[in-house]
Image (tube, rainbow, N blue to C red):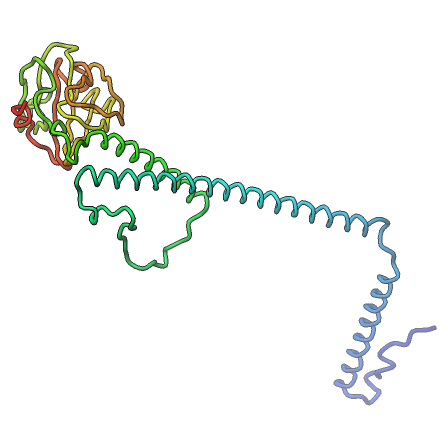
Length: 308
């Protein structure tokens, strides 16, 4: 069949049709041909078969993906259960420790003749603060576990110290030997007093926070009061240092030891040998640097030395 040009259907220039009519006729023809082509392509696509096995491979791929997601979900659930079990176990241990601390605290209140209303272990300590801000966030599980482990170690440390302090309380009062008295060595002389002095290394005026007692190397160094060792080991400037915490916020320090015989957390009694005199750290010769503080404030050790 011979194709009929659009110009004959719509009319040429001399057909008497206006240019607008001829343009509309041509546009309609183009749209008709385009629609016919699209429809033909659609039918051809429907009639064309899919490549062999493509649908089956697609279904298998979807099944593998679904199975993998289920496995990942189950693994996440197992991990969450393990975290919760560990959390519950740690919480149970901490509850037991707190109950033990409460019982020990109540016993110390009785023995120390303290005010039971002021030290009431059945009440939660008072706390407060402003409302949460926009920067507040929820605690993550791992962060919570870390905090609980840290708190558990602190509880164990406090329980250890309270048990040792209980041994220092007799008949409702603190023993007299909890107050520093006397010298930390049997023989020796004060080679540098407390207060401002010329620094032995720089010659400049500097404050000396303790008393230096010189003597023979490896002479025994004694605790001047009973208490708990809160530091034992090398410390900048002090050399080998022993720090003992006593009652009423008092702390004594013994520096420049050649050897130390106690460890952090030990309970020591008045007169116990804690080390040997040396010249470790910032020192010009064998001596004991003896310090006394109360609630972190430096005190002149001279009055405690004279009480011995």
